[in-house]
Length: 341
Image 1 (tube, rainbow, N blue to C red):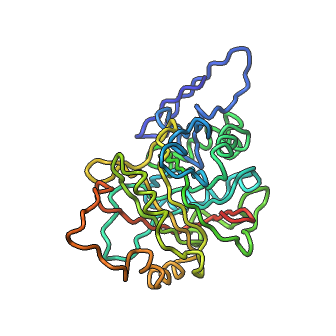
Image 2: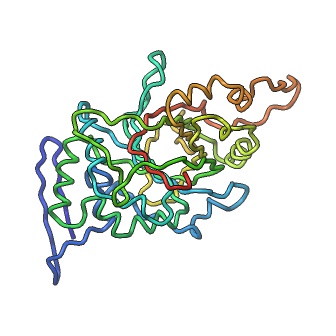
Image 3: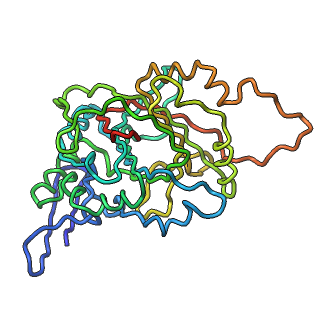
């Protein structure tokens, strides 16, 4: 059993190890959440997800079945520490790309689309984004040796080293958010980034930001209780030809998996509601995203040119608590399976 006391005013750590019958240290997912370079918090851990059979919401009723499972962590990086944070990711040990069920990963740093848009209404600045083939694949990684190796949990020394380093670059623990991936669409990449043992090979000096390797456009929705099936049906019936556009990588409608113990994340939805759905589209670069926004496909997908309903026609009940909120990211450290996301 390991107990930690952390003081925000310093890096003082008090570690008490109570061992019975063995001096060996075993990093348990319920104890260690250095989660890609972040501090431990017993209140917020990336807890093991329930199995596919136990996740009733994913397939019951009129809701769409999941096509993928997506695990994310939101990070609040201290101002001026962004390059150090990215270097920690780039220089870590990981076998992610070699694991069963892995499809896609990137580290996303949040950006504003233009100077005229208002600032974001929450404080996180980075998000790790991993797409798994199934929830079972995610669980296998979460409870296996590869997770411990990637999160500094192979020994007490490695564990404390990761802890102290994280305290220097982050404000608070990560905020894990898990999703069922719906209506998934992706293209097969012409080539995949170079890896060594399952992780990226990049130069990261901790002084300069890593180059952007993709652009991610998201819309967050706060769908009202009872309207989830109608919302998903509307998206399923949309006219869209994203995969015909140059630079398109993947699209997924993300449905929050609130049944996953330890689920956290931002709670800044309208009128106190939570963001329970989010569309996520990955493009090769910002230019590809801008090209889509100016295309006829964009107008068709967003109702442009369609006949308007009669004023006398009954209006459907509202689906969400407020308008969707767009969020944009530059993505780096991209990893992909040969088949794509």
